[in-house]
Image (cartoon, rainbow, N blue to C red; front, side):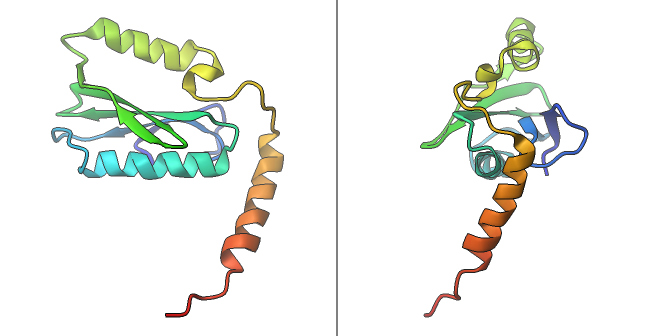
Amino acid sequence: KPDVCLSEHTELCWNTILVVAELTTTSYTPSIPAGKTLDTKAWLIFREQPWRRFVLSLSFSNNYHELRVHVHDHSGGIVTPEINIHENPDAFKRIMACIVFGRRDCIGFDLTITINPRMMSLLSGAFWARNIKGLPKRRN
């Protein structure tokens, strides 16, 4: 589960989450759990929200003083250099304003696709139940 998430719904599930953030007191390296789990969370969001072009996520590290923006698309992910939120508060404010007040395409939505999330939830459950759970066991 994410440490912090932005959603328009009170019920949190992977098809309603807009942006996730991970918090850690340690310094950031790509191999720390916060970095690795953001990769997994991006995959989960893509799985449940096929209308996404990319997934935007944040990591706060080094006692929450450093912010990094993570952008995952269908090919992989990139991470920005650290932004010290105390030394560069304007950058922090701009990033947060874009996430909270920006258009949906600023956080990865493809505006050319319209999907009813409730219907997608039903279809997703049926898809995974039929295609993943119904697979025969692998033979060694």
